Amino acid sequence: MKGFILVAHGSRRAAANDEIARFSRALNSGLAPKFDLTGHAFWELAEPDLGQAIDNQVAAGARCIRLFPYFLAEGKHVVTDLPSVIAEKQRQYPELDIALLPHLGALPGFADWLGQQL
Image (cartoon, rainbow, N blue to C red; front, side, top):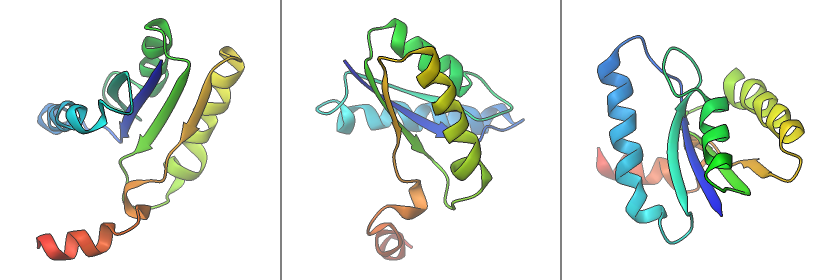
C-alpha cells in the first residue's frame, strides 16, 4: 500500500488546524488514483504529529509513504526537521520506503499558477 501525508506547521489556533484537515480531505479525490492512504500531520502545536501519522499509516498497511511539506520556503523544517523524522522512522521500519516530496513553494509552475489566481 502507498500512503501520502500532507505535513503542515500547526497552529495554536484550532480553526487553522481544522482548515488544514479539510484541505487534506479535499485532496483525497485527486490523490486516490496514486495513493491508497492519505492524511495530514502537523510539525508542532497540533495533532496528529508526523510520527503519529506515519505510525498510523504503517499500521494500516502502508509500505511506501510520501510526505508533502505544505511550506512555501525551504526553511529549517523542510531542510532539517522533516528529514530527521524520516531517518528515525526508516530506522524504526526498515522495510518502509519513505520520502519527502518537494515543498509547496518548489512545485514546478506554482508561482505562475498563483499569479494567475490573484
